[in-house]
Image (cartoon, rainbow over all chains, first blue to last red; front, side, top):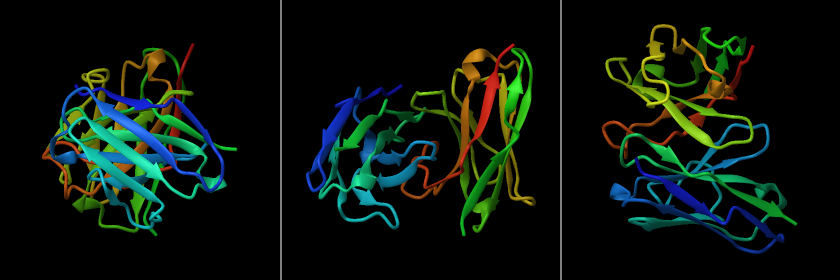
Length: 108
Length: 124
């Protein structure tokens, strides 16, 4: 199975700054079948990005995804306090689908 | 409004059984694959099981294969997860989630709508 490794584990930034989150796969993710989710405490995950770079419905353009093969990034620009959350990547290019361990984003 | 609502969680002894349900509303349930994903306390997301739109194809994580069974009733817009031979390591919040099927592989997909989750605790 494909192992996804997210870095950094925790990211602490100020409002207005830009966050860059990394997701590295142990094998190439076919057809860029990679998604990103946001999860706030006590809430269910929310889909942000699929197909590595396509924003889900209702997601602001401050959120952007990129990458291919084994290296993917989620970029959040103009950080707002409500962006504080844990972010997970998921690959669905091969079975079983797998998730990264998450990156915690703190807004100072 | 598109909504998924899980129920059926609770406290169960090791070796016991539980049946989770997920009631869907606001969309054509029978057109979508559905997933169960779990999250142990303080941990990340782990895929558990998936089922295709008509229930004819299912998949399971190795950790639950032979113990859990996913099913659906499209007439009642409901997804199920029958969990047998439960272990302490099955303790988690269980989420049901919808998979849109398009722009996915034949067996895996991303999840665009999630329920709020139901908590399963396996302990003596």
